[in-house]
Amino acid sequence: MTWSIEFLPSIIGVTVLVAITTAVLWGFRAPHHFAPALAVLRGALQLALISVLLSGVITNPLWVALALLVMFTVAALTASSRIGWSLQHVELVFAAMALGIAVTLAVTFLTGAIEFSPRYALAIGGIVVGNAMTTATLAGRRFMEVTDERWESVEGWLALGATPRQATLGLTRLAVHSALIPSTDQTKTTGLVTLPGAFVGAIFGGVSPLEAGRFQIVVLAAIMAAGSITAVVIVSGLAPVRTRPKVPA
Image 1: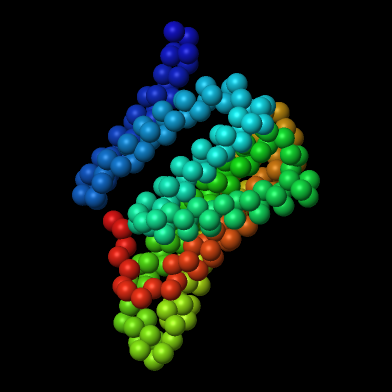
Image 2: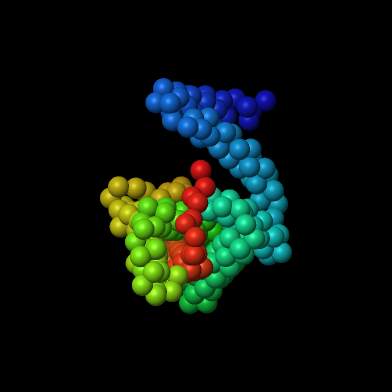
């Protein structure tokens, strides 16, 4: 009974915020105006479940590895669905995200930038996986959108004898740049515009601001590295187009 009283203000606040979001989108007649509300509900249920599970496995390396594997699988499948379901897209997204995340975490822990322990592996691994998912989605969708918008130009290059990859070279670079804009802006405005959750959480947990800042800058660098690798691999895999791409709704 005590926990329900403690969480009541949060429940009320979240409910009001979701109602405002839905009302604004519904009033503007935006498509899928219930999607954010459903996303918050799903996120709340998932966080409740993962909070219960992590309380008992956060120090167990095998369970942490399993948790990260589940996170990665769900993230990769989510990004694949945004680009368009196909075996080729699923394989591409899994490979791109796996490479970006593996390289990033290997450098982070092998250099000693962050202590290698189950707790930190889960924390930074989850952050990197989530951001790699977002970057994969943005890179894939932006490439398909810009290729669709400029299809006449692509066809012109193909008619002149360019290979499919050569015909979309400029578009792949544009897609990578666009996909990294959110991460770049987040990184360069940290401390001035935003205080990241990892930074604030570390301070609330008793860590000194200096140590929290050190941890956060490593996290931001890891996000940028994983995102760059993921985006480049995604658009490189999509680049050899021979037919006009259809952007998923």
